[in-house]
Image 1 (cartoon, rainbow, N blue to C red):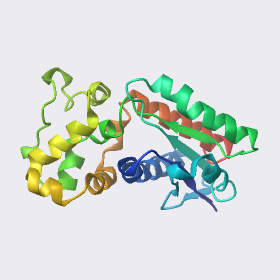
Image 2: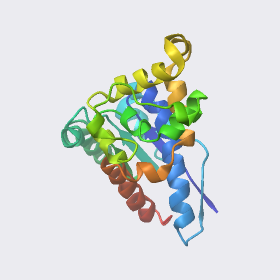
Image 3: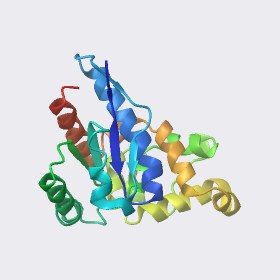
Length: 217
């Protein structure tokens, strides 16, 4: 049985904390649905530091089967795809990089995806779900009933940090870096809620096509 190894080129520490678990869990789910049964999934992604740029990605060509390229959409995900990831893809292909590429582009910031599941946030913070509340978000978003609305949160990073502070207090939030909580949230998040978020679905669809291209789905 072959092993599926996935690379990740992500923007910053919180992205690098949250995305590996999400990507590997989604890959496991998809492989489990496949009738091929010829791939296992490596437990860890292969990280490429942002500072290494295209050269760092090129060095993974013999170590991975799929490469995920992340950039925050900053309110314009199509622009991020075209202006940030587009040139990277062109340079990779020009240098013969044949590994399938999967784009990971939230509308604004990756914290929006982390906000999608109150249960996972409570598990990460060690708090009862009955006491959960989102901090300072417009009521019409109603994230509890409409997970897709996380894409409309105007400042996801601030919303996540304020929600954490509201649950465990300023002292607790300062004591533990947010990336630690994001890693834990990714371990517990219910994938069915992420599957209601359009930009996440776009990522998942690209992952499916990448797996199909290597005979893993």
